Image (cartoon, rainbow, N blue to C red; front, side):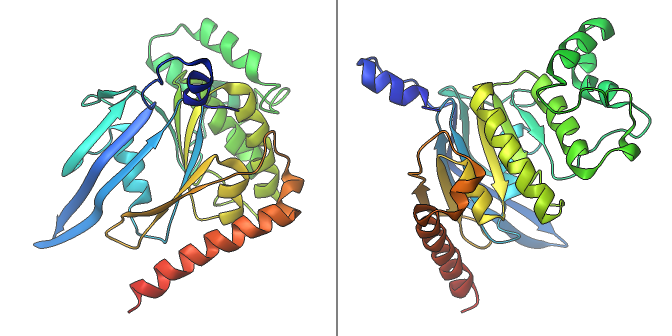
Length: 273
């Protein structure tokens, strides 16, 4: 998938502003009278239609960054812009999926999927119609009346992702959505998400610890330092699209993996000095 900026450049039109732009974002907390900086002057930009990953060591502020973009927290300093405009009222402007599926155990797959629509005032009938149209795409056809306890981990994540997509927001924030799955299920979910994103025309920001996941899915990868998190570098993922999971065995993928692992190793090594 090509970004809107690429299309604009080719056509000679003025490039559109990034879907998401973060400018010198900092965040700190005070805990027990102690000042705790978590993010330090983080800047990044994500064009419309891009898939961008953020990777870094545990505790570097990746989830805090997504919380700020989603409007769940406010930065200590810095600015968040959506479509080029300062986004002071960001809550609800993006769809946010956490590592835990957060499905309500007393609601069926279908009723979990439409929860966000119902909270926005969409009628139950209309919400069910929209969700049922997407059930086959998410591999959930025939399971709409099952409850979360009867589903596998992968199916629960697909149900949670359906709920996220039904929020009908152009910007999707994913905080390690497959981190709790076993390796085989995670690989299947990564391949599934790759195909789904290529058909959804959404902008996605993914937080992950998984180097292969970041490289397989992304157009670009931002590498963060240990806390307080800063953006150390940005890696362009030059692998051609469309991509299949078999790409992870290629020489080109191995070279990118080695480079990204070296960056992360340097960050961890410097943090221990």
